[in-house]
Length: 64
Image (cartoon, rainbow, N blue to C red; front, side, top):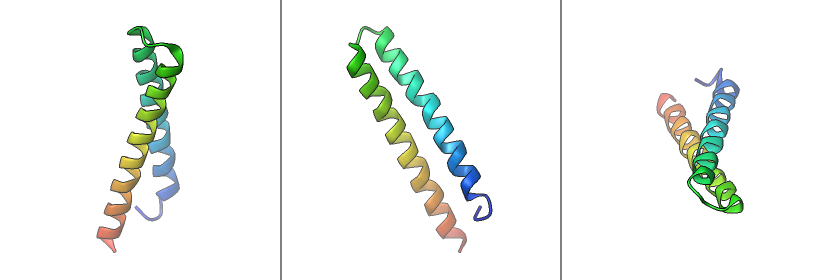
């Protein structure tokens, strides 16, 4: 995993963007005002990316 760390970060960020767009769109379609829907998408992005990066860091340290 150490050799492909940049690739994994790119995959995690891309997946986070998909989650952010989906979360924001679903919130907006559910009747949430647009600024709050943007914040919902941003929260989904931040939560997913931080959790995924923490897991990859843990797995990288476990291999060492």
